[in-house]
Image (tube, rainbow, N blue to C red):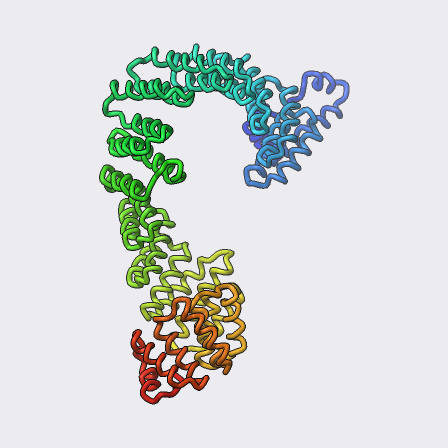
Length: 586
């Protein structure tokens, strides 16, 4: 029995620490009743013990993330004690987290009626009222909180903001005035009041509010900027310009004002003046880089509105590079601009500078590797993909691109090894697994293990049936060895249906048809391939010559074999075709 009492004491202590209101206590009336009815006291104690255990277990389950279990346990608590405000509060928190605001509100309102002095109940209720856009009710809760804590600035500010959101402008202004009386005049409160006056269609009072702010500190240039922006909003350009110039009188080195002037001239359609002010702002060493980058992003996001040309954008970027050398974000912005201009090599250089300057974002490395791939710079891709796999060993794309580089550099064993390693890091991504297997199949095929390669291709397509590059390559490899030509035709036709103008895919389809003996249809698709960019491709030109030969057009066939040679074809088989004037299978 002693051990039971010790265990019970630990549970009760845990509840006392975790609960907002503490556990329910045996009342004096129960003690009196005990003299009359000892069994009743025993029953009450048992209920109390059960309640404490369930409540403690509910808190533990919630902490472990088992919210549904916690809800069931807390509901059982309320069956034992329907007036437990603590259980109601804990339930309300769980419902609120699940966006069940109706249930949470009902529970909190009941909890507050039982325990009106608990500020946590009221603060959570006010938060839920705000989330459900019941701003009046939220303001009333904060007003109630202020009655017991009138000096609490957080409550007063929240009350003012809720009244503002409820569009009760005079009441909100009065609340901000009360806050101002406690904190003194400051720009945050003045700007809020100014905005409320504007919403309430009282522009004169809005102006007076900012003028009062200026009077509190006439040497602060930012306040003149607020007044200038206000006049600009109200359409009084003359007074706006006067106050912008006042900033330059007080602080000639101010950089911020140039951004305001840029906007001023932009609205007046004086675009050259507007850009000149932007340049001054970007050149200012008194403006933080983050502010300049935010301005740059605003300009780029709406180029038509800001009248930002490519030439002007490049100038702003060059200013950032010169004024803020070594900043990773500047080089990232520069890289983005150059890549949008399709200047891949220059963009890659900027990305490398961003990485060297400390940008550790894997997306930057991924972009770098894709640029290497687009440039077909396989040595660079090999280097960068190896670096990426070392720095980010859990990112499968690095291994995939490393495999691409190894295959292109004819390092097939390296490709198989790195693809096997990266495959283990793929989680719930069947298409990516398919790509890995397809690439591994390429490496195995290049090593001459056709059967193993084709098995890998089949497994790949089971995982990623729409891998069109894989479908094309597999179909072509089958045609080269005259295996499963019907299957090759189906795969190639699927690719052509998706990409009817791609010369590489058209060439594959034509060659599969050629191997099946359908020379007339093969000619049609090969001619389409030549018209769509293959006219200087030696392989396609040679294929077309082969097709023409099978159609008994011998002179034309020789002509296209000669074109294939002139465009870089060097194979011994091609030379024999020209010399012997006949088709020779490879």
